[in-house]
Image (tube, rainbow, N blue to C red; front, side, top):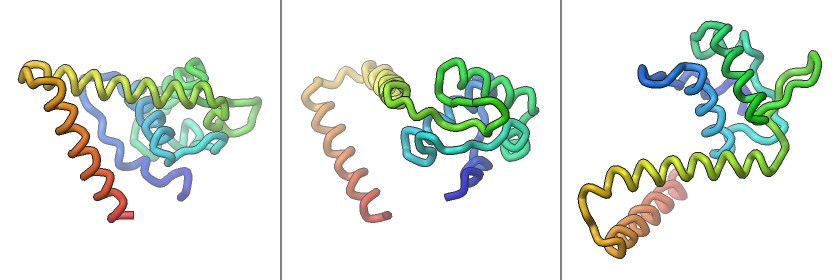
Length: 136
């Protein structure tokens, strides 16, 4: 897959700053394996043009990702996804925790016994995994 594929599907919400949504998109692409450790990413200008955002917003997103050690930029070389496994594992843990927290928040009002909820989650997860296998 080309580095540039999949960028135009990014749809922004009006709640969160665009640059943070771009950072989140990078994290999701890394966790799903669409972007891999050490992979070159689009330049700031290329990304801005691809997803139709201001180049300054793209710059802000890249600065944030550099501060989080998500990407590495050395000299005039293109930016790359970090190869630091600790950072990559942190990203996965962060996204998983956010998803589980949102799930818990949404179902806690229903007052379902934990055992019933776990059985339902397991069954739906297994169905989803089987469906993914069929589609690959």
